[in-house]
Length: 83
Image: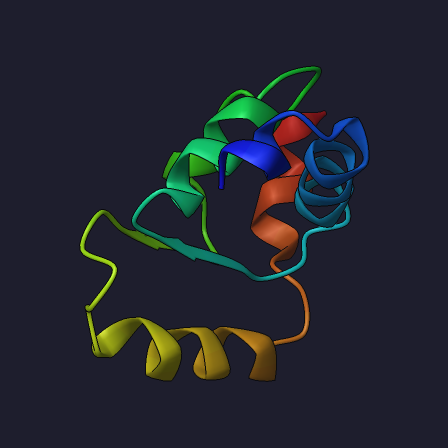
């Protein structure tokens, strides 16, 4: 994970997914990548609809929650909060 934290493209990808109201999920050290992307209008990334996280990398509920979130396609409630 530390290598992804050093990749601007990875951070930008997460930031753009958030800004486009897409579902995002991360577990364990992956949550640090989300924290790194929480800038420039995405400061509330970790506390937003459609963002699923767990510090427990073995949390078996996260994949199910993420699939359900993807099924919603986008989380427009985020867009309203960004404006």
